[in-house]
Amino acid sequence: GRENLIRSLVQMDAPDHMKYRVLTQSWFARSNLAKIEDHISGLASQYIDRLIGGEGHCDFVKDLAVPFPLHVIMSILGIPEEDESFMLKLTQELLGPDDPDNHRSFDSTDLMEVVKDFERYFDELAKDRRSRPTDDLASAIANGQIDGQPLPDLETYGYYIIVATAGHETTSAAISGALLALLENPDQMELLRSNVDEYLDDFIEESLRWVSPVRHFVRTPVKDYQLGDQLIPKGESVALWYPSGNRDESTFERSGVFDIQRENKGHIAFGYGSHLCLGQHLARMEMRALFRELLSRVDRVQVDGEVRYTHTAFVGGLKSMPLSYF
Image 1 (cartoon, rainbow, N blue to C red):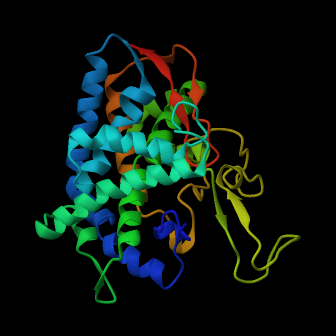
Image 2 (spheres, helix red, strand yellow):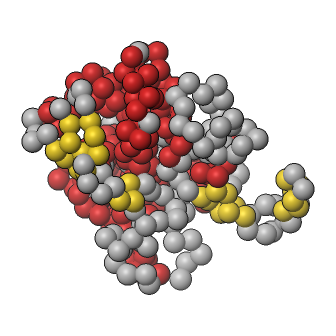
């Protein structure tokens, strides 16, 4: 077997990490995303149209929180709409292999098969964009160069996989978890509705802290590091638990309370440092667009059934949230 099942930005250190990051960094910059803000708002509006045109009952996760960010990232990447359900299936198998609804099996060779399915698809995509480049992100990756050379296959596939998977599963979890937090804290819902313009961005930051859709990453220190009274020896693997960090009492007052007026906005839901999430501005833009539509057009929302979470220790959140609304 090869050393890396997937080699993407997440698995890279300097100097590779920055060389690869630069290939798409401008795509995810706030200034570039401003061009598609209207498109994202229009999409959000369509999804809320569907909600309003429905029966007054939906599964918010399956009907809205999952398909909306999936469609956004796939359209940026340049993947046709008819392939979105295939991408969703593979993402869920890759990120939630422990979940009985998602996994092929617990066997690591099955995970390898999921990666191979991704690679077969992205191999075709890369070949197509090399022979017929367009202005989408798939073309930028397919025709990108590192040190004057085309990207090797493993890194090309890894790039596609990280954009396609990280680009929607995390945002879906943030969207559905944010709404649940509002429904469980009616005073915060009332406050937000009283002045959406003033509180929307604060609500999004608090939701990201509260939900922390990426549960952990494992890192290996290259030198001894003293953290408080704990020595972390060089070469020893460390699990970074983001939901725990985002509830650190020494950083966040009343850390176990969902509070959209919280003064400290310094959460680590997007990571920290050189690996800070490439898609953070896109995620915020999608959340802003969707909640602005939802809050202005749907008056009353309540949980109506069993709320269920994905079985995962890595990336995820709610997998089912039945709602009724008026």
